[in-house]
Amino acid sequence: MQELSTTLLVVGGGPGGYVAAIRAGQLGVPTVLVEGARLGGTCLNVGCIPSKALIHAAEAYHHAKTPETPFGLRLQGASLDFAKTSAWKDRIVDRLNAGVGGLLRKQKVTVIEGWAEIQDGKTCIVRSAEGPRRIRAEHLVVATGSVPVEVPSLPFGDSILSSTDGLALTSVPESLAVVGAGYIGLELGMAFAKLGSKVAVVEAADKILPAWDAELTRPVARRLQALGVEVIIAAVAQGLSSDRKALVVATAQDGNRLIAAEKILVAVGRKPCVDGFGLERLHLARDRAFIKVDARCATSMRNVWAIGDVTGEPMLAHRAMAQGEMVAEIIAGRRRVFDPASIPAICFTDPEIVSVGLSPQPARDLGNDIVVGSFPFAASGRAMTQGDDSGFVRVVARAQDHVLLGVQAVGAGVSELAAAFSLALEMGARAEDVAATIHAHPTRGEAFQEAALGAFGHAIHF
Ligand code: FAD
Ligand code: FAD
Image (tube, rainbow, N blue to C red; front, side):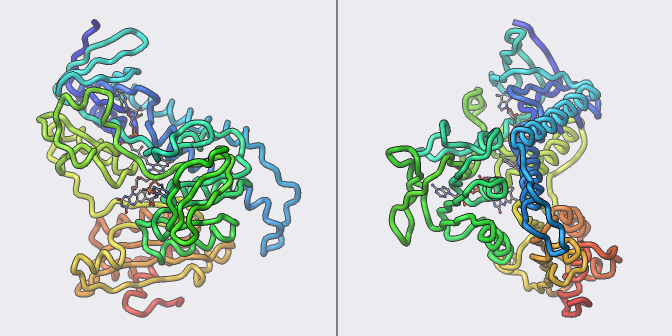
């Protein structure tokens, strides 16, 4: 068998793994990256990127179909060639995929295509097209990510789609039932509703986006209604009807219901990818199924590190990347810990939701005495001129010294405000710092400044 020795072996080429490898390469650490599917992992190939492409195309089509805008624009006969949409989305993925390959090459990272089978904490065997290879390394980074959770009575296949299958559709289904009103189910469900599918969403909890507070999710619930999406809460998907043409749902109010659907998208969460590649040989400490890591992403075995979705919540690409960069620096001899002030979370629903740091109730639950300031986009000139003034920005500050504990927003395009919110928290800003920063006019960002002013009761424009 061909043998290869290196300093760092990274298993998994998603945002966690490829960033770790690039940074290690920059620092001169000899690095091998093994990827079984495609560079970029879930995020680039079947997650963040294709979903945002689909959402963009769906929004553009929906907009073009709107009979008449308030400013008098009337577009007639708008049509969408969805096969072309799908091909466009695939081209973006291909371009980014090639880009990641180029960045790795530039840093002299050896990329091996194939599935790694872990032998021990320093060795793995990769079965690639060129035959099996044994790779030995001083450090092993496990960055194998996560996979969609299946509902046992709704196994993926045929008309039952995972998020990966949903993103690979080349025609718009006439009707779509979505199981799970988490961010993935709602992002894709809303996109398909805009593309013309009749969509129903089934959620076991008693509200959509159960992890988010009701104030933030209300504008999304309203938009779902406006789009004609049926939302059925407190309802558990049971399986398919005997003719396989409908989803059987047990509801708290009306007993069992049938929801006819051409396709059923199951988006009930993701689980770590920890099985089938010899990881159990390492007997690593676990946190439920996830690999347990400390603040340096060290596992319970010396020189074995784990980053990204395989280490637990929040399962987000930017967390994986930040951990990857940090671990590479630690392996190169630098002193680092993973201790961000916050990890921003975004739902790319319509409207978008951003949350950075603590929302009011969790802040109170942690014993904080807080002040809250909120500014509605209905009072924002920019939001009005963009034709969508739903939503608001909200700041949560400690009462005693006004240090910001959290910032949230819901509204069109607020994902782009996440950077400002995160920076404020990371810099330990007080509400006064944000209030005293001149924000350009007219922008949605002004709502952040106004919300900070609102925390002391003197927003100027509200
Ligand atoms: P992954 O991206 O899952 O990569 C792991 C890689 O390891 C995979 O490529 C896999 O093939 C490879 N691998 C596994 N086992 C082996 C092995 N034995 N040998 C070789 N290779 C192996 N996050 C956001 O931050 N923003 C978003 O907007 C967002 N949208 C999403 C939308 C959808 C539909 C989905 C499904 C996810 C979304 N996410 C989003 C989550 C994001 O994709 C993940 O958090 C991120 O990809 C995790 O990165 P990772 O490197 O930990 O793992
Ligand atoms: P989830 O968000 O877990 O949603 C799945 C939904 O399906 C749940 O609401 C569940 O009640 C419902 N469901 C399950 N089974 C059934 C059934 N049989 N019938 C009907 N409904 C069912 N993780 C946290 O721990 N806390 C957070 O605050 C948090 N915030 C996040 C914010 C963002 C923007 C993102 C991108 C991720 C966040 N995560 C959080 C991580 C997230 O939970 C994981 O990345 C992943 O599990 C989300 O995938 P999902 O949308 O498929 O599942």
